[in-house]
Image (cartoon, rainbow, N blue to C red; front, side, top):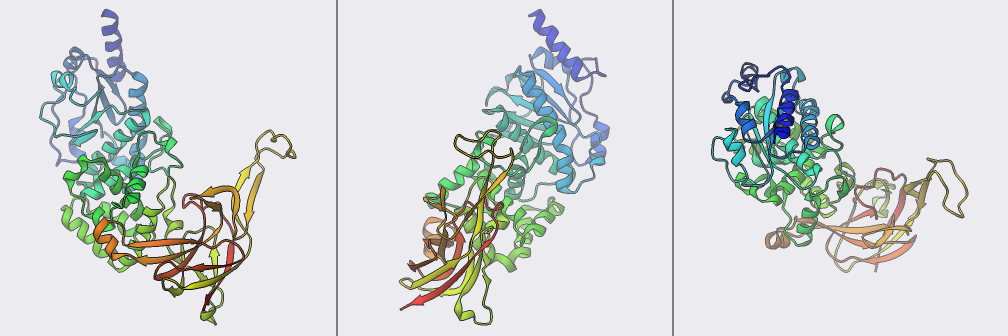
Length: 476
């Protein structure tokens, strides 16, 4: 017991090297009031009560962490990661980093829901908290339940830290979909401590254990209960007791933040964070209204092709480049291998037969040579890049959604209004039709507009290069 108290007091001295009195103040009320005078002054923490309650304390530049978990590695990781996040929040929200001098908050890392007795005994929690599943932020305090795995606990701290930054430096959170979506978007991170990088584009689920937002969206799309853009913008605050709404608000903010038609309007919303939620959302919808039809199409494609690492700029629908503009009835197009669906000028009806002629060679991926060649291979220098070239029939080195990688795929873009009403599915859908080989005929499954792309994950288009020359002819 004596050894434990010695270690605990030593931790406190390390955390507060210039504050040796157990009655010392942990936050500088004067500096905090200068940053935002609208936020009430926090009551002082009596460190002797913290010691008596058996809690540990870890302090950084911008965060003091109180915890009932005796894991110093985890605690210091969280504090240092939070400190490293502050200048990144400043950059994203357009705040001069000098304004954060003296900005320090408290975080309470609690072992499990309902186990707040020690924090109450230490008078760290003095009011009844609202029901929350994982995290909650109010004024000077961030409340966190320990999560499975270090990534998800750190994600939660960065999520709640984003809320705190918005309250202190933007004077508000905006509408619920914006507040929670931006917090999720920025909290998706890579690395930890001084190397932590916010707003990371995840390559796979192994980078974010237990996070699960991508899987939830894919599952709900498959079940026919995906949310439309209108649905996302109308998520009420009380819905955020259900994890599905964190997933959809993340997807919505990621979409708006990266789409070229909404990026500027979305990023300017930080200037309106103090506005009431209804007028906040209404003003944003008014700004993007001229592009609404295109956005609903692109949202549908984004959700249907949801993957880790999806690139919205490359996966949105664009017009296919015409190769014979002088004779548009020839319907000859260049299909970019580094982009998703590309729509033609050809409207089609269910049952139509088309002859598709394609030519060209393009890069669909690459292999980097290992340090030692595989048995039977010719030796090559480490790091040598071997591109995968293919034509319209694709390559069988890999498959995507059951078809050869790089295979030319036709599709019909259509609006299924009835499906939208009955299942909540996005109104716009592309029905894919394999069109492999230099010469093939296809039968159109539904009315709509003919589109093309190569068969490739929307998360892996950036290393592609080249195009296919595609000609379309109606058959009688």
